[in-house]
Length: 156
Image 1 (tube, rainbow, N blue to C red):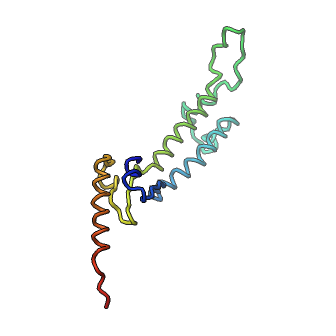
Image 2 (cartoon, rainbow, N blue to C red):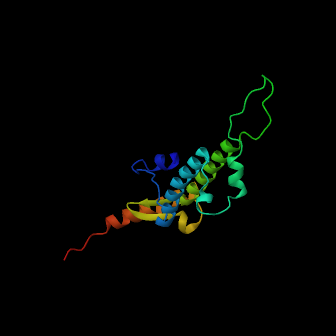
């Protein structure tokens, strides 16, 4: 962007988030709350499947195994057992749900407007413009604006 700023010092460059479709925003919000509820259930050891009259999946059972904190046997060795499964389950829920939430909120948009007129859209083109393309676009738009400003306006 330094090239653009140097070539066109009067152009104001700003960035902002391009909102995803409402359905994706709602999915991300739901996942955010669901993630916290799921982590809470893992920590307190409640089985939501039993309440629903269903058998808990093996991944849920794995996350509930051996909740005690590992003990240090001596300075060189940690006790070898599955005491970390609850921590791993919470981390797995946290990171996987964050990954899905971020994917829902990401649009991949890179939209360029000049005087509120769209001049480039990554959503339409499928790629980012090169610096040379961007300079060419801005040059042609600036020339067009200068040309339009020089045309006398007819008043009725």
